[in-house]
Structures are given as C-alpha cells and as structure tokens.
Image 1 (cartoon, rainbow, N blue to C red):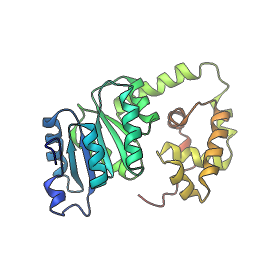
Image 2: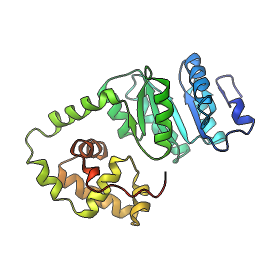
Image 3: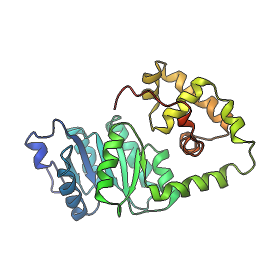
Image 4: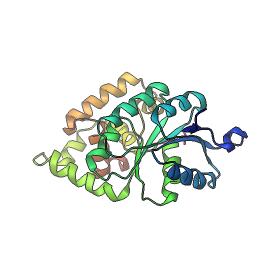
Length: 243
C-alpha cells in the first residue's frame, strides 16, 4: 500500500467493532494526522484510512468500507461534484462531510446539492468534528452554524421576494406532505423516508414534486432551508425508528 493511503493501527488491531469507521482525504498530511489523533481519543470513532490523493480514497472505500468520509476540498466547483459522485458510485451507503476553509455560500450549497451530508470549516473546534461525524452517522445533516443565518437570509432575499404569505403555502400541504418535509429537514434520504412512513420510494419522489410546486421551490436544498426557516419540522415531529 502506498504511503499516501494506509489503514490506521487501531483498525488493523481489530478495535473498531463498536466505533464509527471513518476515512479522511486531504492534501495536507499534518492536518490528517492531527485529526486522527483527536478522533482516536473520542473512543467511538476510528480512522480506518488516511489519503492525500482522491484516487487512493476510492481504493480504501472498497477495502475498508468507511461509513463516514471527511473530504477535504477548498475551491473547485468542478471537482467537488465529480468527487461526490465517484464516492457514491463506489459505496452508496457512505456519507460524506466536506471539510473546507472555503466560506463561500455557493460552495456549501453546491456540496449539499451534490450529496454531501455536511459541510464544516477547517478552523472549527475539534469537538465539532466529532459531533458532526456522530450526527451524520445517525442520519442527520450538519453545516457550519456561523453560515446558517447567511444561507437562510440569502435564500429569503433572492429566491422569494414577492410570494404570497408563507402561512398560506404551508397550510396547503397535506398531512403526508408535511411528514415528508419534516423528515427532509432532518436530512433523511428518500429511501429512509419511505422506510419510516411505510411507503414506496416512488411515492416519496412523487410527493416531493408536489411539495416543490406548492411551495415554489426548485430542489431539495431549497426545501431544507425553507423547512428550517419556517419551522415546519415542529408541525409534525418525526417519530424516529432508529438512530
């Protein structure tokens, strides 16, 4: 195995059965080493592979099957969607958290639109990294709190300057539609929503189309932001079956 990608000693020793297996890819080996040292101290997270090259990460996904991937990415709007797609193709169950120094809102939204389950900044506290890993592993979403208000205010200002009252739009949702919106706000995928509500994936997709039309939204990310801004999740709290 090349020096650019290797399994952690704790994984080799077989001490990771109860821990969340995680892979890290970033251009800076020193940053990776520091993150692994901290995460190893958490007890419930184990770094099963470290890579400084993205192609090596794809190899490690096949070998080690990490549940969570910390993907270091800075500025490339073209590279990020391709990388997220490649990860999904290699392991559809792997959940990606983009780890970046880029505070551009469009970059964060692009990550979420292309399948990332979270975006955290490289200057965040180490404890936030562990908290985010646990949250995403349980099925949630995470993104930097300092950017949340900016994302929501941008969404409100730019996307819906002259729409009818939101209360009327929200009240037009059926009970089933509200249930699905509440679960979207938790970060659940279509198949997870279908499992919880005992309906088919096709029904979820069809209902989402109706929701977008009623609320005047374009996609899942806009719906996520809309749900948080209007506290739709509070109307139909999800009855969690797991995690």
